[in-house]
Image 1 (cartoon, rainbow, N blue to C red):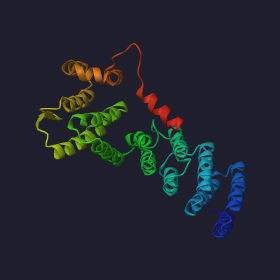
Image 2 (image 1 turned 180 degrees about the horizontal axis):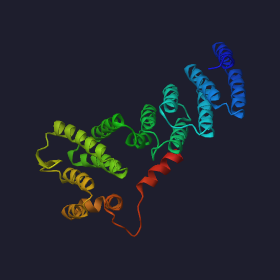
Image 3 (image 1 turned 30 degrees about the horizontal axis):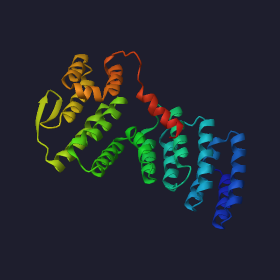
Image 4 (image 1 turned 135 degrees about the horizontal axis):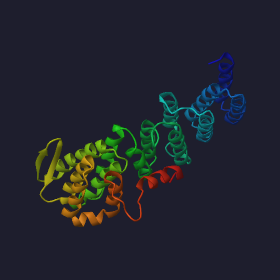
Length: 302
């Protein structure tokens, strides 16, 4: 950081300490604009990020989030690559944002949009997704957080298991309804071709379900594939077999699964049509795109 920039930050910090927030905000933006017009993007990013953090720490959420939006504009203008440094800077600021901040959903949508555009990940950076999900959960935006948990890291997946189990408990712990919560996890991960998390997440839920309800099952194993066969819950057997079918990508196995469980094949008809397209090359008259629905939710900030 240059001496000139350090002096600017010192003056800014003095205004913040004096409680002169409006003047500090206006002056900071004016100086940052000069750096941006001069294409001194590194300096402008350092300045804006520092100022945003200072405002948020001072409980000036409006000014702090305004500068985060500005930071994202500069990120995009400078084509800043989505890497550890740029993502960490956003996460550090996001942690400081109040959970009740009115612009929170728009803010995280902007962060995700930048990461989709400037990262190698189709849906954006998973570590950023993880941080976004936790902030949304903190703010009570449970359903909005779910999408980010699904697209996050292994830690996010475990939080997702916790979330679904909480929903099951809140529903009254009716064993016959448990598969509805488990299927939510399985289909969401299969939609994005994340078989590993579908398998690990379902196993985590099944372990809790067995411990809580004492549900009877038999373990079976064939090659690399393991299955818990439940005597009184065919939906859980179906979900496990569905993951195996997607792992193997064997169209015959997929067809047999639907034939063996006709009522469930009817219940999940749309989801299975999409998986048929993605994993088995089965064309349908009217293509279904759950991924498009997921992405429109992200970009719309809904």
